[in-house]
Length: 282
Image 1 (cartoon, rainbow, N blue to C red):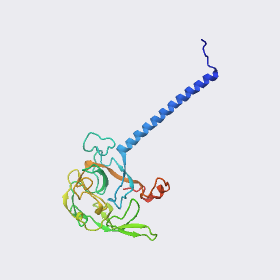
Image 2: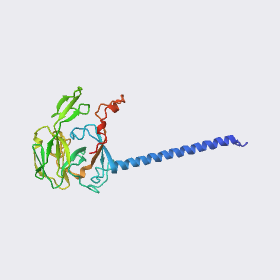
Image 3: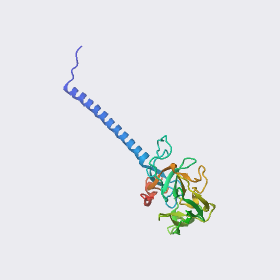
Image 4: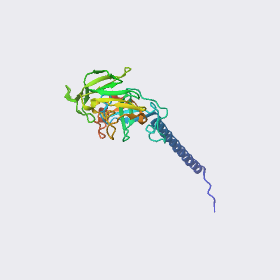
């Protein structure tokens, strides 16, 4: 049997094929390493640094609107099993714990059903909190409140005229909703805006002392918010919220849409965006 001796051309072809195979293997390995590094970076970002959230309701009007997407810092108040998503560490409590400040907008787990909620911190451990005719009374002093111009919301798939709003139209015929708006000021001078439609049963709250490790939270849309004024129940009130349920501090709006976008109409992806809200800090 005769031996086949490869010609120079055949040898070159075989070498080129071997080089191509090696290059392909190296390319696949490099791509796999890149994907792995990207996954690790995303997990570090998601677990330790920031977490994305969207606003599905109008309980935080006028500051946050249905259709807002925001980032919350995970380190602001320490880390717990609630902030370590998608992993769940075996310990209870918080490490590197920090207490929120009055006026912070916080994301936390509902004390009954564990759903993510967002509210504003009004009172902290040791504070005595009450309400009279819709005005918070903090440690015996009514929070200063100043009426502002009406807050105007343009009607869209994500925003409609809830009760307490006055339906109106602009000179161009666009439908809008008007809400009574106030500026409220906390001790130390921190201010924020709230909506209030008049005196309701929840506008009066008997004095209560915030317990150790707890916080009293309220929505800025005072007459359309289930918060610490109500007893804790799934899908509803919160009562005093343990700080160990904190997930993070709302920091910045990264996207906002009025809900009018349609996938089959790419131009609506831009026309539905609320460009003026993107990048707003909280």
